[in-house]
Image 1 (cartoon, helix red, strand yellow):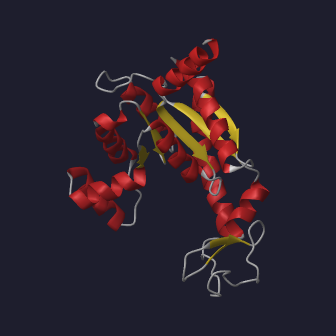
Image 2: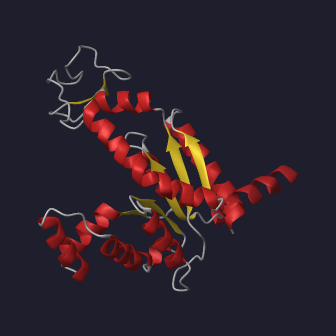
Length: 242
């Protein structure tokens, strides 16, 4: 009876856990998208992507979408004010009340501060602060993940010449088609993307670290192990930030 009661209590605690607002950070190639989807499935919460929000507002012809489309057509980046307002309106929707995974936002310190102020608004439920988890992988490992990636143009199978090479170099195992490499999967492009990521992310990391709402997860582990590490970090951070 004691063991059954303990199991029931554990299961109940897991079912009642509210992730709240979760910011997943990680450099290009760390597997952030995969981990975000696993958390979406685990907790039944939405993933909020600024890219999706922009495309959705433009497709629906909203006031914000029309402004964003004009800015993008002129070759400029959409400013913080428009992105902030898109996020604000999205967070008023009921499916975010248990929590949500933030993808691509906040990218800057100003956005992080705006988000903190926004969540303090009584219209948002639950009234939980943002907690941030960064998936960390070494530069050399990331470089291999990106530059080693090859794709089959016929069946879309993905290989990596360093970690998941095809049986015959350059050819797909399934249909024998010549594998291709994306034009931006090169070391110079990756190096620039990393510089941009680090410059943008460092202040955001420092912000949440200073607030005691930041943890790291080792991204060199298996997909499942990384996910467990992220869940443990969320439990730890959420317990400390209530």
